[in-house]
Length: 342
Image (cartoon, rainbow, N blue to C red; front, side, top):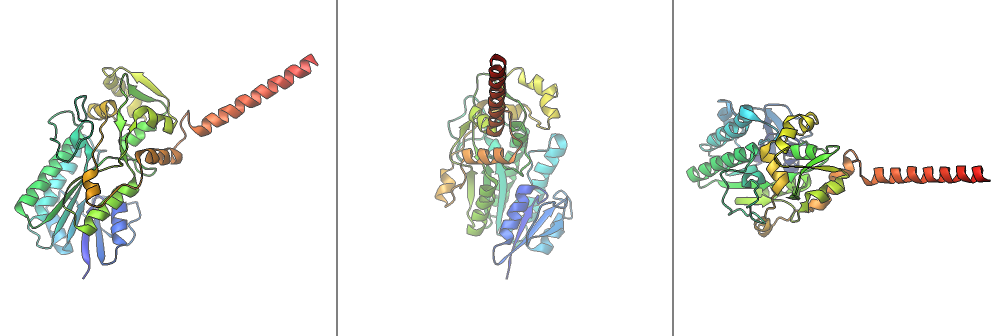
């Protein structure tokens, strides 16, 4: 008998990749659900249209009889009351529906390292046992923390269910649309003056592979998921070929609200501003002890992202083109002077 795996949020690229990967496992029947039909390939997984906030969700899951639920619908690209409704209320409703279902044996929640926030007094590396702050988090970080609290409530009411929380670092990939990716792709990136945040990334391949690892192995617990290394923001921008302009941190919110960054599609609020000011590095030894290690380093992830994106002003290609142009101009001037003096 097939093991039914339900994946939420499959209209988003990373969730669709998870569904496609899990559907390729023999003996797995994967169903992707979302309110919006996916535009990404789901492979052998099938799609069922469903709203996590709907009172009909219980009937849908009862008919599907899932063994495993992968909740990957949390989105960092939503804002305000609407975003909170989709992220938090959707999660609350989903876990409430899972609680009485006898078929559900494993629930995996895709969370975020943003639950740790970012501050000047933060530890060098945050671990899963670190206390979650009451302040210094982005709105998405607060949503992720609330979602985790609801999952903890589910495990208390149903201790027989295996629950897993994966706190992803910033996922950076050529086809992954994210606030941070758009911010780093700006023609000129504003950088808080006097700060050089350490940044840690997660390649989409590793994000999918980590999900696959905990699902197939029924691994329980809370885990940070990221490359082991971290890069200073200035090095990230050098790899991206992006020039930066130092701005006083107190001016940055005004600069953002003035529209320069927002018009470019990179919505950065005060919570996210803390991320690019102070940075955050997560300890990944717990997941390594559980048998998973990220294949891509943060450096390689950024290099690949830069290679498939629009070349920055200071990218190797543009610098090489400028060098050739200068060399050509120098040769033309030399030829002109020789002819004039000859």
